[in-house]
Amino acid sequence: MSDLKKKADDFRALHVRGRPVILFNIWDAGSAKAVASAGARAIATGSWAVAAANGFGDGELLPLDLAIDNARRIAGATSLPVTIDIERGYGGDATDVGRTIARTIEAGAIGCNLEDSLPGGGPLREPGEQARRIAAGRREADAAGVGYFINARTDVFFRGPAHEHDDALLAAVLERARAYADAGADGLFTPGLADLALISRLAAQSPLPLNIMTGDRTPSLAALADAGVARVSHGAGPYATLMKLLAEIAGAALTNDR
Image 1 (cartoon, rainbow, N blue to C red):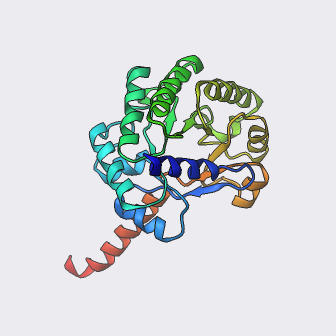
Image 2: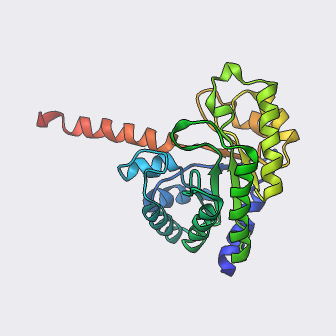
């Protein structure tokens, strides 16, 4: 457990506003080794890629036991800190979320992403309800004696087109950020947000270090750093790019077999 605590402390220290840690998301032990060999400072899974690599759709369709076993193999394949995307926490209630986080710690993870959306693409959970789920995870992590990093994902910006991102949505995210911080979250993850002015204001006003996910409209890494971002994730991009390349290579190799 002392080794796990050191990894957790090292991972936490990577979150510096204005000097973002880059997480090139992986999906299994092999991809973890490849990214580690490229010079990564930490390893992070992406739920969409993990599910797709195992033949499932995203949205907790991947069985929890399989997700935990995959996390254990990843943690065993690298000496780097490993953070796991557990989607909504695989729990109908806060207690279940706490148990899921405890299982990720047992598997060797030092952090997770925990999102506030409801299953099936419905509305977001109320901030108070999500805060209770985060608090349950915080209690389990603290009981394990690990400085586990709960990255609280909010899908406020993910649910609408970019041209509708405005001050009202920023205020809603900040309300959630404060509630999640009070509940014990360590980071704020806002997929879908790409407007540099809003990113800068959110980074400055958030009580938690800000995590931005890359996409077609995402500002450059230098611009994100200047805006005060502390963490940059690549999400499903690496998996999608490599699967496209694999299909192209396979197609070229199989040309004469048709």
